[in-house]
Image 1 (cartoon, rainbow, N blue to C red):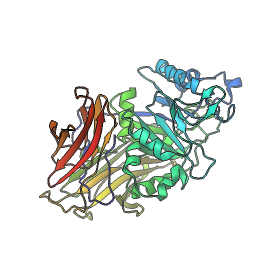
Image 2: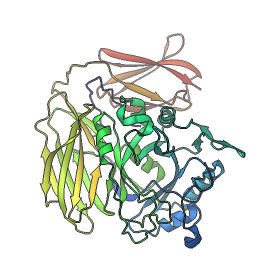
Image 3: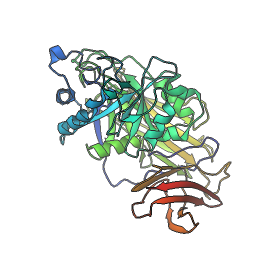
Image 4: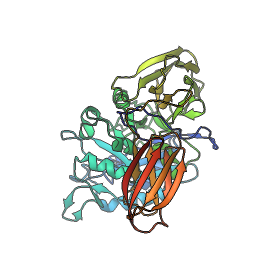
Length: 469
């Protein structure tokens, strides 16, 4: 999962990897859509497409479309509004597996929540093999995993505790998700949320000629969440309710991944290696050094941002902008640099001050007006000596807890640190040294019971309780 940030401290950011042993490919698709299993395929009488299997087959014929995620509404309310029943969730997962090939990836998840109540909002979720919900009807519980309606705190905790899951925020309003954008930063929510959307829909388009362009623009919410300290990327949603998958317009979520497999896509989403594009075959290369969008790193030199815009149709970028802000400042990001009529940009942030934590993301406007937003890169500028003043100790999170076989630990440390396990008698039963903030420790050989996990870095240490089952 993602690293965490505490707004009260000056962070030393860690890197997800200074060098990459694999070449990342560009995959274009959509993770927000619906079928007749909830309130999609509304034209099934004319399209003859009634279920996820038929929807995936339709999507495979769309141009420049490598993956489709179907995210059914998680609740029923009434037939076709949105109409999801728990008995349909497992068949949807099976149909996605059957539709996946070496050249097309089919995924199945849910869109959790409602949009008709105060502090409501929809969250697109993948990585759960069971339906999360709150309803009870004559057929029984309309969920496998209970989560009370409008209880976003419990929902984000569930997502954070599932190392295979990720969540993105759909068509947000200012007070959605329990008033998330107007309340204090939460490291737990930060660990759960991978992205928020740039454009959505048109949700009820019936076009299959790639001409019905999304007019919505949620970049304001993206910028606000970044200014609060959240570490998330920016997505692009079709939100299809008719049989238009990939064909309503050319808008795409673009994911950078080693290959087109479910595990690699999930990892790319968790690491924010993606961007939102009005154009269906535009490839954006955005780096600081060898680190790409979604990465976080620290260094002793002023960061140099390099961008290459490569449109496969030969289209020129009308402008390339570098946006930046100070992490957790609450101040909206601003444009630091812009080039016109060029496909490349190189910019060094010479104004950055030692000890500062900043984020950078790219906006490209093409000559036809299409816009592309990238996920950020986070950078911490430190002293050459590596000695800095801390306002508080570090932050770390471990999950799941209780754990069975694999414990994941996320921390904002980027220097050497020790992880120690103590049993109930105070005896050290395990100790390791790490240098990166995202780690995992196998626990299947530990005796079941209660433990204390202590992380020590320099003069600072923290201890948390752990249950191994």
